[in-house]
Length: 551
Image (tube, rainbow, N blue to C red; front, side):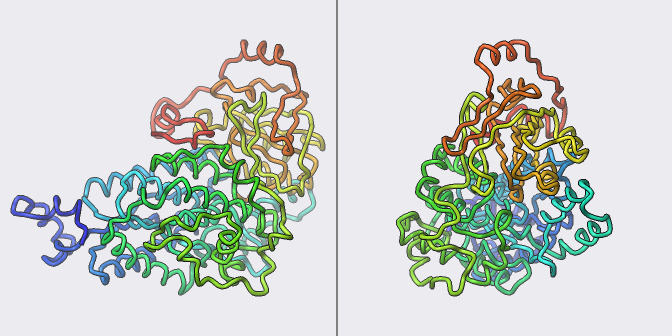
């Protein structure tokens, strides 16, 4: 058995005191001969996404112990985007990714665990867990907590957000809004569409860091418990063969993950997180990789937010494995990449059967979009790049007049007050990783725009980011951000802005002399926090174009 790290902790007379402490938490003499597997749980009652995860972690612990390892359960944190959305609390959301990574690294590094299984639900959990495991580079597996099922009326969290916009417009009585609020989120599981949680779960499965089928399973299901038991067994195989994240998380594996995200119509947050996960393992993934891969990858999945279906429906037809096999056979995926099964991606997919009677995943000859919906835009407004989510339903270009706001709250107030009109480009700035600090998601303002029926008539740009539930004509991750003196900081009301997804351009329609003149007079109107986690984050975080990493 591979006891590369734990032997230094528990072997020999000099470690008697360490063993004594471990006996105090239930270790037996036999346990000291087994590889130690840290099980990092993000379980907490703070959000439906994670409320069941401690129970699943216990299933994993039992499975590890049954497979002749010794599982040690510990907790890291989670926060809730859905609860904090549109508030100052949302500033902590992206920060939590780094806290999760740091805490996993800290516990495992301190306590000499030979392998790691992490289990997460809400969307920052997944990249946080992967980053932590990548830094440690010990045999590791990620387990997804699973997706929530839609309500009896086919509504979900994003439905509530958009109904709020309808209410503000006067098209929805308050009692109907409250009704949707009451029925839409029932029980455990991550948001049910192809929002960020399910996007990242799918990316991690395609990357090879979770077991086949893990990404689509319902949170409350026998399949998810089986997935946990299988992960407990699989970690021992990885330990026996010394298969580490660096063996799995290769350049080619990340390219597989990007392609699957595009085929599924996944969240813009995948760009940020995939770059960050790759950075943690020492693999160079950049914005232009998304453009390159996007040119040969169709959007095939008719999933929310811009499609009709939920992840639970896709799971019922086979999950993402048949899709990956389709993509492998088309030469879009690299089948030689090793995975946490100890086998290659191609070997994992060898016996996967095609979809039957599936109207969720389109054939290659009938795609939803011929190339990627994730567009990397450049131009005088985004010298270092920006990320757009454009399906084509909104059109592929938009020119309008700027309406600038220095915070999300100001923008939301204007939208809900019906101060935003057709032809406007809403500009929300000072919400980037450094300027927020924390890079808040803009689901509240974009949902309000959709709810007011302006989705095709109003565009939205920001140096913040978007929820996976966002849809419409939106551009985020604009870099340089406003707090770094990016051009987004000097936009004035009435300025013309062009979003051109055909040519991947984002342009402020004023001349260079005027831009330079305004920049020369610019001063940051915001004072960054001086203490605490947000202050530390603002001082260390890098550009969104580099994944907003803090290393």
